[in-house]
Amino acid sequence: MRIRGERECKDCGTRWSYYETGTPDCPNCGSLHSVGVGDRAQHTAGTATLDLSPARNLLGDRDGDVRAAAERATEDCRTFTRQHGFIDAGELAPLDETYVGALELRAVADELARAMRTDDAEEAYFLALLGGVDDGERPAPTEVPESLRAARGLAAAKAVQEYRSDAGSYLDDHPDEAVRAAFGTLGEHRKRIEALDGDVPPTTADRLVRVARELGTYLRAGDESALVTARDRLSRLG
Image (cartoon, rainbow, N blue to C red; front, side, top):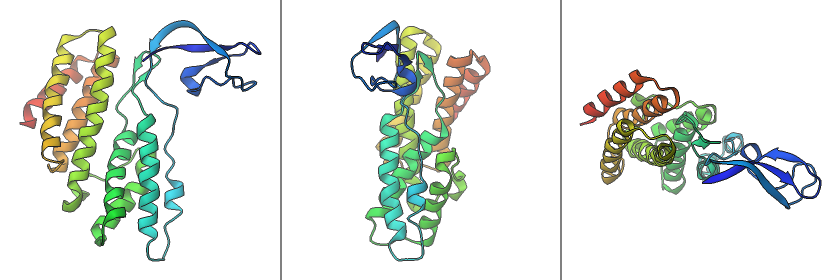
């Protein structure tokens, strides 16, 4: 959406950046009576950060601790991803690993929270995600258990869908038919993964995300090599 990023309080005259706070409340007096000033810009980015320490703190030696941690991680990741966006004050942001990881952790944690039983490999993978996603770290594709690869695939598809949507809005203001066409091809691959319920090799899922990142790099920095590389990866997705 297009918003005026700077606001001025009608009660005390304080000015602040809505892009930074994400709220119309005056940071000085708390008043809700404010007006937007300056030009409007596209903005979808939220201000939420992902903190998985409450879920990690639920882990222990008792039965059910992993399930409790999974339930908490599911809710925290859901809250974070719902508030996330990729246009910040008119500028396109990267497709960050924390967002992709939060989508995957949410899917994996939801599986574990609902499962009647889980095996050691599944729990170890969940713990690896829980330990690193909020720092932008995920396990390598080779570490994904067969039973959880659909979660990785669906997370990649969802991440690409949301990034492509914001990139499309950005392209409305910064037209580039070459990258728009590439995003269209990427969207077809995303639909195929969704049709398979995410059940694709983890390397394929990760390649989908990598292409979206490279197209974003091209849009943000004008890096022609990133566009060439993205097109090459698309051609090898099959």
